[in-house]
Length: 89
Ligand SMILES: [Zn+2]
Image (cartoon, rainbow, N blue to C red; front, side, top):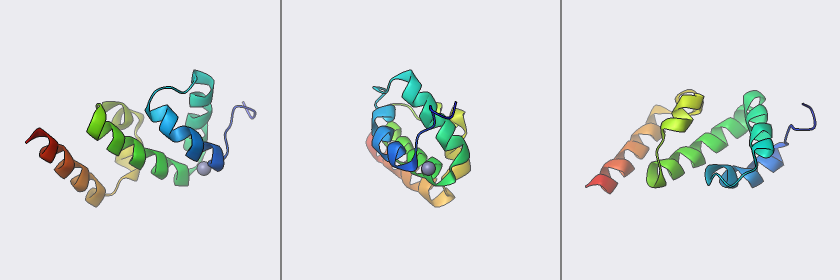
């Protein structure tokens, strides 16, 4: 369990891979464990993750994980909503 845990530095490195879904499950698990205890990384990952997904895929998964609701400010959500609206239009 301890060995699977990633550091904050690791998170910044693997976050974009995790979002692109190219991260091996073991690292992905380590990332989730770290996010569970580290608010800073949770915010970081949820913000880049949500924006990435909003623009390229679906945002459902992150919302499911509870990351977005807990960490994104109302203002940030509004901005993302605007982006999505622009893309649709
Ligand atoms: Zn961290």
